[in-house]
Image (cartoon, rainbow, N blue to C red):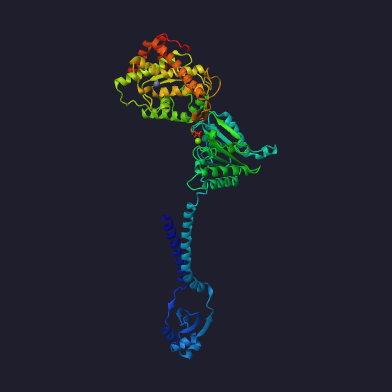
Length: 612
Ligand code: ADP
Ligand code: MG
Ligand code: ZN
């Protein structure tokens, strides 16, 4: 509305200017026109002062004897002689006056006719034009659901390139090839190679899928159309499909180009599983994507990239040959990748002799996004304590913050609670120290973070992809350490063990049912587990065994837990003095770091042993 009035004012101003110019023009032409009434003219003629009269339409131009000009008007109904006669001009005198009749015409004449009649029309047209234009934008806004709301990444000021992406070597190589395809399709076509149509980036959240796609946009000098799959789907049915059409059409026009569909699982879920609810709109959108990809000619230089952290739920049709046949897996970063990522994200932050490698060592299982967050938190820590540089301990403190949430030092706990928590954590730590297959303890603390009352941080000494039965058992035993310590010290148990117990139960049942680690049940899996492979979470478990087996499973789970429990009990029973010592330090100082803990265990002669 604001726009409309602004435009209207503009148009009116322009029209004013035009009319003003014209009237000026007309004025100027009629330089110093003395105007006679017809009476005056008649008496002048009778007085012999007039030498000539020129008639043009109804206008009379009078030339006086001294050569000066004047104007007058006659009536339109009568001729000039008639008019003058009517005003009593002597016919004798009139004969001395040179009468000439000029055709009414010429620019000025026509303008004088056209402008007054045209002006309102012009004005109306202008107003209509403005209103229509306004209405059209309004209507466009109302009818743009069908249009893809895609973004074109051209790089911009802060261009993301492969340099900004640490690690992910294979993924980068794969994508470099894709960019090369687009830059120089002929090279590949001449070799009879088919240009890939779809590249699927798969990886856990925060592994850098979106970042990598941005880097491809920055690397390749091709238009890059970016859209999140959830944007396809709106309230209105059919919108998604039409947005897909629009997206592909635009990309094809701009070819060679790249289309990037982020979070494609939002539309690409397996159809008809009931997973996430049957959604007609999503199916239509997915179908349209498939149709568009199939419709590519051999030489269509458009590559579709998509990202997902749920490849397991993707519709098989998307994974069929000819669609997303290039799959790029983005792994969680390993030790040196983590160091690289930390380096990238601490650029521009003033570091005070920080050993990023040491930070990387303490952050197994952190994704790229976690590490970026970690570096940022470290800088915030330093800034909050008004320091000029970021230190190693800023980084270490941030690890726990990213892992477990901010420390809640202010949480009021009673002395009794503090004692229970201290013994609980001491139990975990002591059992970990006493078991050969457990990860070494990095830190024990009773400062609560997030939901945890306190925690014992154990970290593997090296990157691990496999975990053995012995390690699982040690893990179970350490998890039960808190529970065992509480019972043996206080003869009572608190709710503080509930999450430990949950972990223990879940792990033990997995050992038996999924990993075939129970000797009694043998090397088989039990139950069909539809696992979300990247999230490692189960959603459904179907029973594919008899009731009798079910009882054996229960017994075996119980046996595993019992074995771990006994091991924990044995260590804590044998080293009650060490348990007391750890708990005492925790009550005093709240935290014990790795070196101090190791020295303490050494002084009690605790050596890691295997579970028997
Ligand atoms: P995804 O899309 O896989 O969930 P993102 O690409 O959005 O993850 O990553 C989130 C952030 O994490 C990125 O913006 C970047 O700052 C950081 N990050 C993730 N992986 C890397 C990496 N390999 N190198 C550098 N930074 C990374
Ligand atoms: Mg993403
Ligand atoms: Zn615990």
